[in-house]
Length: 299
Image (cartoon, rainbow, N blue to C red; front, side, top):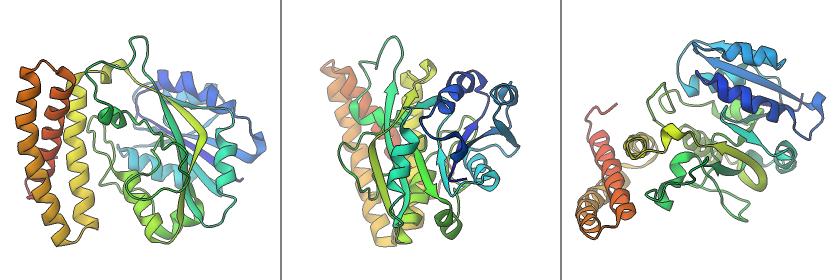
């Protein structure tokens, strides 16, 4: 079995029902891939949706995306393991485009473009372009080789099984857990893959579409996401950066927090809502980073 596609889902049976048939419609030989749904402690009809589609479903009681992904790896049979979210769907040639990258044995991880589907009202006018990444949007253009910190996103990422066996799976310290918007687990794993000497590649035409839920298109959600981004960055850098580098980063974040607060006031007075909110979110990110780095419990 060359490929295993893993879809982790927690109480989003409706999304899974919409998108699972699109994953099953891949332009790729049916006997060369399997789909596994990981029901991550759901209380809705996730298992029933998978059963109706004829897809194997495994329940993981430990809540958390990293736990679910690691369970998927353990349950899978593929030499290559791809991940896609329950609120996303691939273009028909998605798997073949990733397959082409893994023809090179030096490649340990690969991913592709993630296109946002904003829904009827489109992208909010108050959302700054630099925060679009909070919605798992990826477009590296024509780049083919990726380096830290430009890595594939978790809704369009794949690994060679032997590489996962050598570097380990997803860190359960990082990643979504219920309503907690912690992230960074893909970055952590990609860092380990890269440091082990493997290449990380990008296929612009390996496209996944990501449906953006209306519940996330609020300022409150984006600011909360910025807060958890700061905590995620702090956790990663505590592990990977030297003490002098962490100190320099601490000073930078402190400076950014002060400058962002002042800029927020100026932009608000000028009536520039988008830029004012961007600064507000960046201040929230910096403050969370500083608190976590300085040892204050903000989880």
